Image (cartoon, rainbow, N blue to C red; front, side, top):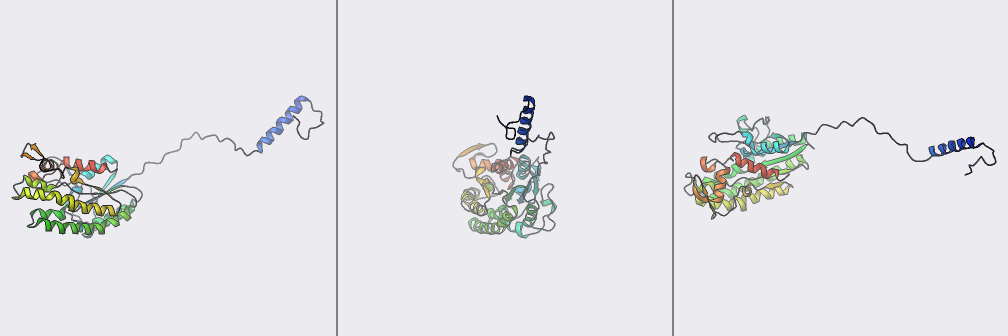
Length: 307
């Protein structure tokens, strides 16, 4: 190998090798190959996990209300508390027992006795206003929003002279109020998941309740009322804002045939859907529409299945 600039020069072998080596080092320094970077021995400190929140709106189903004569258990058996615990979310429960769909968006305040455990003071705001503010404050950290509303609109129809007319009017009101509520929630929540819920068909319990002389007729009527009117209307409104809908009536067996019977320890042979609603709510025993712990468990499971 001849190196430019050394032709004809008589250099001893050792000196010639040293010069060639020096030139090669210089040429190597001019290449574009970046120098090797030695990795730092200090491990990067990971950021603490971001706390994600769950905003709950609605009525006594969301607050976890239990009737006074329901025996052991607490409001923390409620589905919202179960969902928050199992999904590792911090619950901000803005729901108010007794709320109707109109009150959710238009009536400010919620008495302490009507709130769930550790619920924040609404400070004169409606549930909707409080939820919008909360969602904006936690934008990007909202893991879930649930809405369960409309049951208190529909409940009076169980004792109405004309249940169908009453129910039709109630469903129209619920739908109109949801149409005014859900877009504001979606705007504030961004792309956070919103899940709308319906209810067990508690009116099926009228089949065995002495409080309803026409209980079997009411139970039969309630199946189509929930499936074809109430739940269909709710689902359409939640669909309009890209929210998921959990059909709790279906989850709790409300659409099963009333001709299929089961042996109940209290009421004997009764339709299977009636037996299920007796086990999952307090309606059959106390004429109370609220879920038992097993009922809340079923609702929580259905909500968690949407995640």
